[in-house]
Image 1 (cartoon, rainbow, N blue to C red):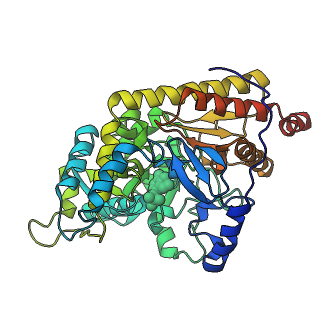
Image 2 (image 1 turned 90 degrees about the vertical axis):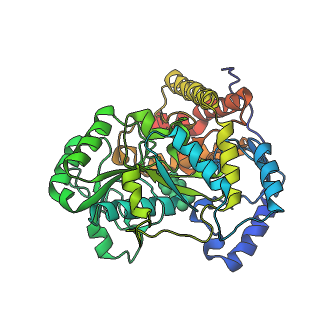
Length: 453
Ligand code: PMP
């Protein structure tokens, strides 16, 4: 990768019009925004349009987008094949109280690619997909409980989000992590149904299941939990999840809402996990709202009503709407095996170059991730679980400074420095990313930190 270090820092972007919209937004939305995740200092950036790998905000600033709507847009913005097909569809009706051929076509594509899928149901978001996967596991096993990984994000269903937060003051001992409430007032009955274990901790999972396995419906696991640190799964941990689930008669639910983008066959297949159910979302909607639950015919029978009322009824006003189905199919068709491999190689080259910069400067950073995802941790040692990835106060300040530096240099790096690539990006975008990181490492801010250590 071409090195152009010490490039002068770009002129800080003006936020005049974004601030204006933010003030308007504050009059109609709590905290001025409709999603907690879009907040940014000093103002959220209001976007005027997206163009491939870039977004242009209402002040005319152009940014390389490393967020891609929270990893949804695998082809970046305004992907023409999707835009054309959806444009065509808009004139012919966008939602019906009837099935369409489009939902079958997307389901066929997913089933053909993803080994664990024999039957699929569509919903409208990742949250819903995880929710129905958990409910399906309950309906199948007749048990209420969920075992999940400490710190991992699985959307907003109560039983999926209990245990997603936590900090050194609340998370309890390593040997017995506490299920921390996700919001003030979360029912204690939910918390008592959810048990947490640390990622990559086989002994911890074994102990936990000995205790709660008999009342647990499923182990809910994202093979590379991103919010917990975009952590690399240890193969023996994946194998243990599998065998302990069998031993205790419960299901493995893989949350691939985000990580399906890791390969043509998804993330579980990449890491040797054989889930009973997979929750999907994001990329399979081609930029439109979507979710899917899939698994073996046997487990998915809980949704079937061939013989009367299903064990688990599932509907949804917008579920399987033709817009999401067509956009998703077209976006996914463009992701051939070769396209996934190319994106993977692109990500690997960026991760390698970022690590080279770290090695060259000896700075206290590490890089995790795979395929089209990377995360820069302000930590010398690569984290293996939520706790080792949890930034202390000083590290959070470094991470924020890193994101600010990227922003000043025309790159939207999401909070927590977790980035997502798209097929719209080029080698020159990769250079921009690596060079911007290099200039951060050589900045007085980082030098001050190293000197203080
Ligand atoms: N699971 C994971 C792993 C996710 O990353 C997300 C979204 N970031 C969700 C579930 C929830 O998906 P949605 O925002 O579409 O409800």
